[in-house]
Amino acid sequence: MDEIISTLCELEASSYHLVTDKTVGRLHAPTVFDRLVGEAPTRLWVVEDGESAKSVSTVEQLAHDMVRAGIDRGGVIVAVGGGVIGNLAGLTAALLFRGVRLVHVPTTLIAAADSVASLKQAVNLPLGKNLLGCYHKPTAVLIDLGFLQTLPAAQIRSGMYEIIKNALTVATENIPLLESGLNPNAIYSDSEFAVIVKAGLLAKQKVMLVDKCERRQALAFEYGHTVGHAIELAANGRVPHGEAVGLGMIVAAKVASRLGRLKEADLELHYRLLRLNGLTFRLPAGVSVATVMALLRTDNKRGYVSARPEQVAMILLEGLGAPAGPVDRPLILVEASLIQSCIKECLVDIEDVSYDENRL
Ligand code: NAD
Figure 1 (spheres, protein in one colour):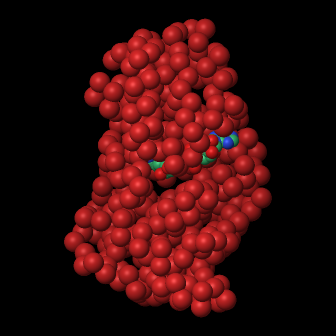
Figure 2 (cartoon, helix red, strand yellow):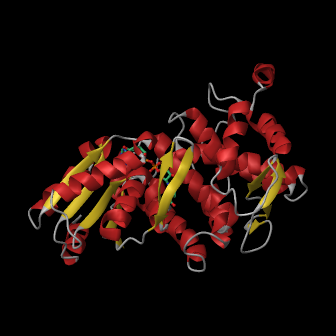
Figure 3 (cartoon, helix red, strand yellow):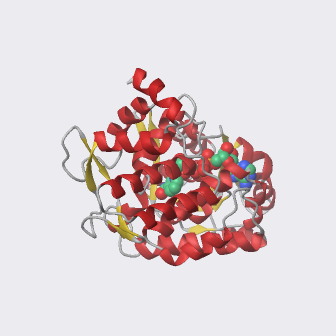
């Protein structure tokens, strides 16, 4: 915390604007705020928790409040929270005066080990996730691993799915660490978190160095997100982002296996790692295959490659650490009917099939 405060002060901001949500606003943001307010003009802005707050209206409200409070081009916006707060603060920082400085103080595993290393800032539209956004580089990322200890197990697991995804797609050197270290209870010490966060960030850095806008090689980070985003949207906030990506990864692996691209042993490794992280291979209650299929059409990778209406562009693996397709465009067009059949095979219990067939 001393280093976080001193590094923030070194930025010599005209004012600091901490953005947080209600939960982190109770647990951790006051610690940062109380220490910083004694050093420089500082405001704390608290938004609602969760994905539904990740909207353009929240960004507008934040910008409005900050301008009214006197922020100028020398101000610094500090995101104290998870990936949602990182994106909200990030997009506000990118837009205010066409760009003010942004600092991330991540408090979830997803944010600490993954999203802070991305320049992508976006909010959702009712029609789909992350549809409205831009790129904005943080000036600093300051992590206090102690913050992660208050995370509910579901949130830790959620972050771990992104780390599993990065290991399967671009950082196979982390697979042994995950096989020996993952536990379904999601209880990890500070030193275990340190190893995990470092592994996550190095995996991300490896690809970001050659593709900082994540439009070419780094599209591999979208592994599991095509079906995952659709499940997350369909579940309407009831399923953590990472868990939805975990479900999406098993469908992507099954699709690749059915296409003869992925070996059985590699598909089995997907199951093993995801199970070690506590995943239940089932669509969330109340989410039908038909809804997921309909939402696939809003996937934000559409347009990278031209596809027929019944095709969906997906990241698939040809092996561990080997995304299929051209290196700088690792997208494969898959027939929607194959995806639908793989969702049913991997994520729908036998007794649910008749229920889903009726709804289709
Ligand atoms: P989140 O920010 O909603 O946090 C999840 C929940 O955990 C919230 O209720 C929050 O209040 C709570 N929380 C945060 N820190 C806590 C702590 N220390 N103790 C207890 N509770 C705490 O979501 P997330 O899972 O961190 O991130 C998911 C979001 O990140 C998605 O919107 C996703 O699109 C985005 N994301 C962006 C990128 C990118 O490239 N920019 C990458 C990955 C994910």
